[in-house]
Amino acid sequence: MLVLHRRHVHACRHRSRGYRKCDCPIWMDWKISGKRIQKPVGTRDWQVAQMRARQLEADGISASIVPQTIEQASKKFLEDATARGLRESSLKKYRQVLKQLLAFAEHHGFAFLSQLTVDELRRFRAGWNNRNLSAQKKLENLRAFFRFCHDSEWIKTNPAKLIKAPKTVGPQVLPFTDAEMDKILAASDSHPNKDRALQLRALVLLMRHTGLRIGDACTLARDRISGDMLELYTAKSGTSVRVPLNPAVVKALNQLPARQHYFWSGESTQRTVVNVWEETFKKMFERAGINGHSHQLRHTFAVSLLQAGVPMENVSKLLGHQSMKVTEQYYSAWVKTRQDRLEADVRGTW
Image (cartoon, rainbow, N blue to C red; front, side):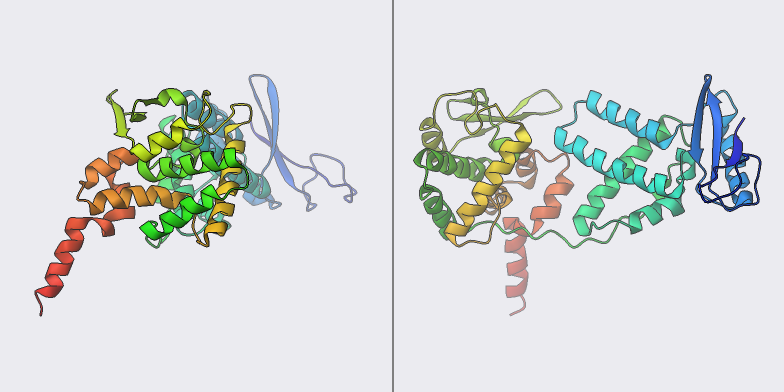
């Protein structure tokens, strides 16, 4: 049985839990398996508190099925995501959005999943600082959480499903030109530490000719390369997706010290080594006089393939995209056959 009571503040002269006429916060408490639980209702209006209490009871708080609190559901969702073997980068994003959701719920006095309606989630999203693609990705993570809760039968409907995605501006893909790549390689060679210069050149060439993200490239293990072949990943079918390495890449990697990882000692965390290399790239671009970032090397790899006439399906596999729609979203403008057709259409009007 759910019980409502006023939790009197220090300034209130009343101390009885049964006194309701003051304006102190309203709390509810109940027992689950003999354990007492107390949560704020999120309102000081007694009638509103009663309506919320009755709704919670209707959702099963007094029935054999105990409704999930937001905190419990978040913990179980993260445990499931970890058990599924998701990457730490994905887990981190889930933790961030759930941390904000819990803070929002605590601020408004929501304890149970059923209290997070469509209107409340819209209010939650209105407080985001994220915009464009970042906001879209965050909404996808929020939807994944509520989809998990709905599939677990903790809520009757999925409120996040009705939250419309934000309007986004298509991402602008800017690959490096050949001239810019020459400047970048020259800047890598000019690093004051000669050993670091060799590593930097090798890392730049590796990312340019394989499309690896910086996080995957700077933690690359030596056993991933056999001869001149790099194993990118293992597809869902169990087959290995490999890419041949440019001779310049092989030569640069062979000049590095023989250890388990090419660009990482293995002593620090992966997040730390990525941050260190990101800062190294930033300084390299400054020396090259280029306003660029490491991910443009991945764009350069993809665009060079598309302009050479490689089918987008194959490019998508090499990039490791889960869906070709992602590849099309970023690189459709660079498909050679599509561009040739556009140019032919314009010439046809002359």
